[in-house]
Amino acid sequence: MAEVVLVTASEMQPGAKLDQFTLIEAIGHGAYSDVYLAQDPTGQRVVLKCPHESIMGDVATFDRFRRELDIARHLHHPGIQRPIEFTENRSRPYMVMQYVEGETLRAVLSREKKLSVEKAVDFGQQLASAMAYAHSQGVVHRDLKPENVLVTPDGRLVVTDFGVAFMAGARRLTWRWFSTALGTPDYMSPEQIQGKRGDARTDVYAIGVMLYEMLAGRVPWEGDNALSVMSQHINAPVPPIHELNPAVPPPIDGIVRKCLRRAPDERYEDATSLKADLEGWRDLPLGQFIFGDEETISPPGNSDLKLVLLVFAISAAFLTGSIFLILLVYVINHAH
Image 1 (cartoon, rainbow, N blue to C red):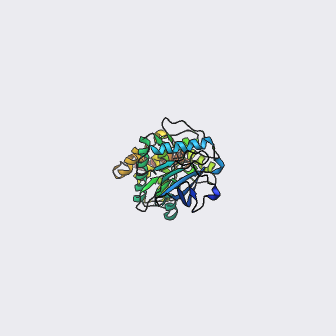
Image 2: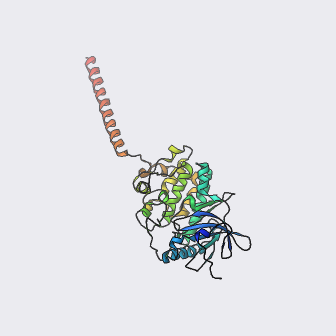
Image 3: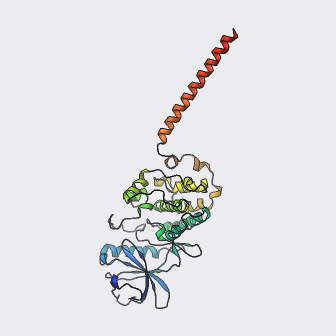
């Protein structure tokens, strides 16, 4: 490959050249990289992912780019964005990615607010299918969110941005919490928030949050700041989805709640199991979604409510017994 032509951020304008690629427009801005739509010499559209100038030459960032490409090279699935090329120059590394025509799932949700149950389930199945394949290759995404999911004009979903993913057996890279947070608070699993690496069930949790958002028109937990949201992921019950969208069938509600269990062992073990339930949700027994789910379906103050009901039941029984005794004494007295 020819030597890389260094281009500063101020020069990354429409019409500018980065090696053999002609920039068309900036289409994204991430925690440590910018994303551009470009055109190769044949006229084919591609996506260029370039690190910010402020971290240019940072060995850890270069390694993160290298790892992202190495992970993506192992994934060959129509629901996952395909990498094309990776430059070796540390002064200006960049990745060339497949261009996917369409818009982000975030744009779809911003426009439509709530999706129909059928559309949300279809999107959930597609996400689960892509992640089931990734998990079978030992890859966990760890940053699934609507911004990292593209929706094509024909309704096909494509997962992008494996920047904080890991692959089984890969060396663990260090990261800085406040400058490059590992995940996005609204979609982070409790174990991620607690600083753990996570596994396939971490992606299952994120898909659960997105399913909830697609059906309810909002994420399960909202707050004024990231710490507030993260605290709720660990401590707060899941707000009942049927209160926000009564059209959601109980089995779908149950599937979402199972994805959002705080304890990873209580979630779907992987995206394959989640995909199976989403595909056959109409045949799932309702019992598993009605009983044994106090953690997520019980409202705050549930223990106090149980105490009130117990006191009420005892009082009612005592009153009933008293009335019975009074009537019995009355009958006996009048019998004589």
